Amino acid sequence: MSVVPGRWRGPGLGAGPMPGRLKGRSPRLKDPLLKFPLPKFPLLKLPLPKLPLLKGPLPKLPRSKSLSLRARLVLFTSVVLCAVCAAMGVTTILVQRAHLLADLDQRVRDAAEHAQGAARHRTGGATDLSYLSEEGQTTGAVAARLDPADDTGRVTAAEVVTGDGDRTVLTAAQRAALAGLAADGTLHTRTVPGLGTYRVTAVAGETAPVLAGLPMDHVQHAVDHMAVTEAVIAGAGLLAAGGVCAVVIRRELRPLGRVAATAASVAGAPLECGEDVRLTRVPARDTDPRTEAGQVGAALNHLIDRVESSLAGRRRSEERMRRFLADAGHELRTPLASIAGYAELMGRGAADIEPGLAWRRVSAQSARMTGLVEDLLLLARLDEGRPLEAVEVDLATLVAEAVWDARAAGAGHDWRLALRVDGPAVVTGDPARLTQVVANLLANARAHTPPGTRVDVTVEATPAGTRLVRVRDDGPGIPPALLPSVFERFTRADTSRSRKPGENGGSGLGLAIAAAITRAHGGRVTVESQPGRTEFTVTLPGAAPLSTTCECPGISARTQLGGPGWRSGGRPQGRAGTEGSQRR
Image 1 (cartoon, rainbow, N blue to C red):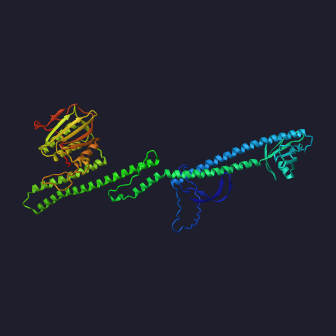
Image 2 (tube, rainbow, N blue to C red; image 1 turned 180 degrees about the vertical axis):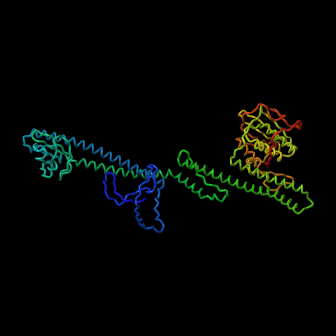
Image 3 (cartoon, one colour; image 1 turned 90 degrees about the horizontal axis):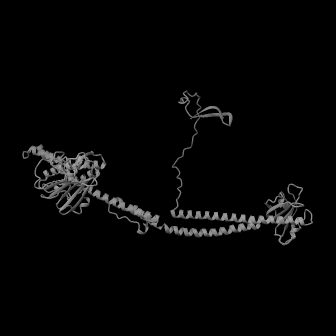
């Protein structure tokens, strides 16, 4: 911002010389609205004042100490009670004072009328105030005669009734305090020197206007006495109410204090050590949902339960991850060792091994590693929620193809297929992934049941529009301890890393992959197992069929295949599913 010389011409301030005028923009810029350059002015460079720099750290502002909830409640209640008592006291005093003044005003009017009548019937002159000697006059009553010829209300005679019933003439100063009243009956408040505050009025008489007044001391005394009495009563009541409120608030906030102590105990628990820590709970008496503190206590207990379950889940996940890393490392190390061994043998030109056999073993071990890595990548993609292919798939054809593949791989088992549908069992999904689900379930049944086991595969349609695929075998079943976690990743009945000769154990990902793919299609997989009967059920939402005929060659709706008669006759053509293995 620059300063240019000129004259100040402000609205209402006139014109006068000024040392400079503030200019908001550079004089060389063009105004885009006016479309012409601004005039150029010589710049007046002013030196900037040198400000002393503060050395050292900045001073810390004092932090206000917040009161506790108990103290704030007691303070707020006390302030409200004080305000209520003060409002009631002031209102009572004002009402009582208005009532007393109204009574006093009426008595003043009566005294003025009496003085007016006495002046009419007495034979004295314009200064006669002898009626004040009559009985019944109020002590301290003032009476006066005004000059009828003087418009300023000059007092010609004034007397006051003393305590012993006598009359005393007022002094000039006292009469001057009563002067200036109009004889119209209006009430006024005047302070008479030596006598106090009076309520006075003046009315016209036959000879001269008369003035009557009564002291206000008893009114003020009554008001002061009432104020003192109310202050004492209100103070005592406030002290008692404040004490009772403090006791009640302290008692009612005790559950909240216990909840806070529980929260502090949980906050100080060593949760980061990873050990099984039993967290403190809020007592049952402090979890009553009918009270605010009970609601907080119940919510805190629920939160503690969630924290404990999360910690337990994290520990289980860490244990499974450690076990999986050990198993995966062993699974990968074995084929890598085989590949390295065969490569070393071929490098040394060993004559006791054929090159073709070595290459076949290297290819087999590579395929084993590739399958494990692909399973992990598939689970990662499903976790990320990547969209799958969505086309209409005939579930009957897909299951039939998977059963043919399983029969070819496990000829020692008795495979049976039943299609209990009245038309194509059409679902919307990824055909390759759905084939993998069925293939993994069949491979699981083949790998973990002895030869000769009967495996029944059923495709059904429910009235609700869902499609069911059931895989049931009469094998030994799943151990009860493993059943709740059978669909979790890296779950295996054999937790060791060893393998029997010729055993091709799985990595524990087959059923987890089947469950993840089914969830991605909006369905679910359940299992029921007991010795002699294990049944996996895949539930998928159905879709409107594209045609009214089944696309499975040689298989019609409501057909049951298997047993001795199912030995030959054209395998269905289509996509062959990949098979996985889940050790249970």
